[in-house]
Length: 95
Image 1 (cartoon, rainbow, N blue to C red):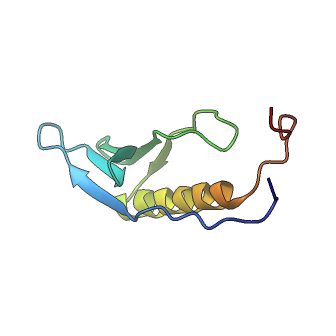
Image 2: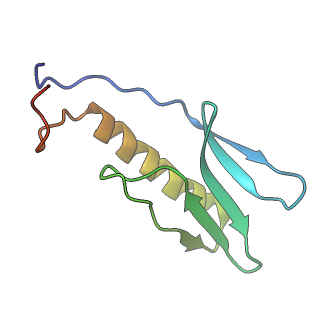
């Protein structure tokens, strides 16, 4: 397999509100990629997808929901970059 860069496209984040507790979910297509919780004086953004090493990503707190959504967009762009980068690690040889 060649090491050329492929084009990866993720849909835009669509934010939906759960009426019960006002939790907002950031959807990437049909995947619940983020949850955003109003904690009173701040908003907590919980990424639900792992980082490029497969590790859970940490929650972050923001004063404004727009700032939390902007950080979610940064993470979305990181996922796009990771999906476009060919794997060259320890298990790169196909079996």
